Amino acid sequence: MSAILLATRPSESTQRRFAQWFMKFSSWLSNRVFKSYDDIVDHCRDAWRKLIEHPWRIMSIGLRDWVHRF
Image (cartoon, rainbow, N blue to C red; front, side):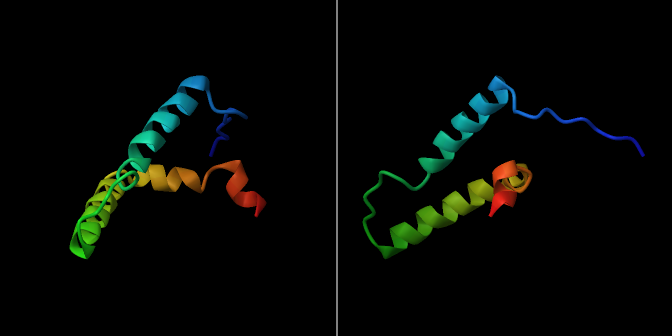
């Protein structure tokens, strides 16, 4: 088994990619006017499907330093 050295701080490109992904993700449900309850459910379902297509994004949250401070 060998040790893997990780950067103490993410690179600027990594931070930029995360910010771009977050902006895209946050727009899946925000800034909308829903027509009905069913419309809300449909949009939530679509947002959930998009989110589960990117499991590594969810897993990467647990690897961040700030998660373990609470």
